[in-house]
Picture (cartoon, rainbow, N blue to C red):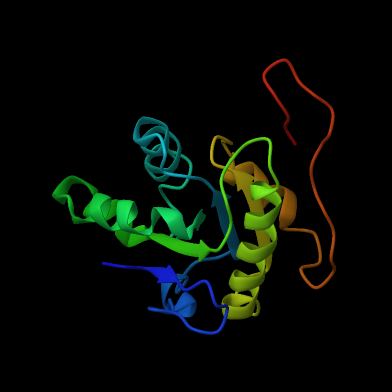
Length: 169
């Protein structure tokens, strides 16, 4: 199954029926969005597939922003029988951005990826959570934090204070 949004922001190979995915669910609708790359398959599997098997296990969809250059690599990955169930839960957002840690690639993916997701699904979610592929999210705690907040107001939740093992809420 190819769940992906094209990089031109106006077309989609398959628009997800969000209302159907969230049928009979309570609480805020959160779009979880990670950006990643497939240059190191061990890291991709550990981070993205690992998220699907842990904190994203109960969530119906996981948006993942990737550069167009990984399109064929991703399709090959999804053709493997062991990966099909994971690929069905991923909604890939293809963007025309480069790669690299010391470049503007991360900002490019954030901007283009978030614009595409908002264009396609902006009214279907209460919140958008954008993360690195190696972030672990305590979904239960996040939902508890967001539940009393007004979904119609814009705000950013996070921390810039480094912890012993990174950044956290």
